[in-house]
Length: 307
Ligand SMILES: [Zn+2]
Image (tube, rainbow, N blue to C red):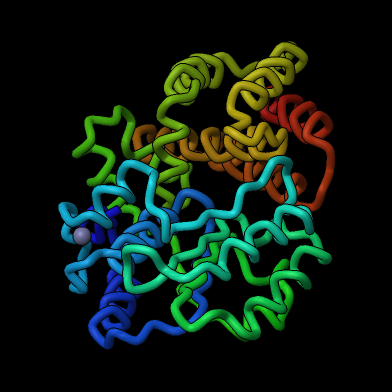
């Protein structure tokens, strides 16, 4: 819940601290960026500082407000509670009702919607009424992957804090500092999102990487069927926390291309590897064009084994 725990994102961080320094935050902010990039950490730090009694640009960590917030018992901190995978209109009504109360211990109330892009249209319309005329002492914080799935009228009433991916070398350093093995592989696969890298680090990625190295050394005609099964097996092990099949399939292709790129650097005879790399890129492109993972992997296995 501290700005000092935020890695990178200097511009966004400076912007938020300027707002705090000014002492007059506006009614709503939407934190936008890919999953795992650090939106939650930054938003929590902003929330804690907005509530902190020291009124500085970083929460003090020791006042009544900071202690209650850390314990999850702050009366002026409200989070929208969502049961399913979307925000229902009833859940939104309850949240908007909570917003109406006056602050009890802090100078303001901070009300948070963690998955703003999961609002149903009805919920969004219900929220819009509150957002149009928020109580003066309320700051609304929304988090979303992109503003595309939010009502334009919601976006236009909030100040957007946009977070991009972390630079690769920085992410590698952070992971290495935390003692995470295979920091370079994880940094590449996570596309600059620290949270995603940490989730991947706990998964089967290192195992798959080891197996992949062995499998690629054994590419030859007649092994295509077995390789296709292996590719699909890896994909299902790398599905990630939301269990999206496509995510696992993309990870397999990213790992494969990383492996071929490395071999390209190490080995003189590069024509075959270039071809293999090319085939892997093509497969990734097909996946992006919604060809089924099964078909993509089978075709790739066949062409890799005869390349
Ligand atoms: Zn404090």
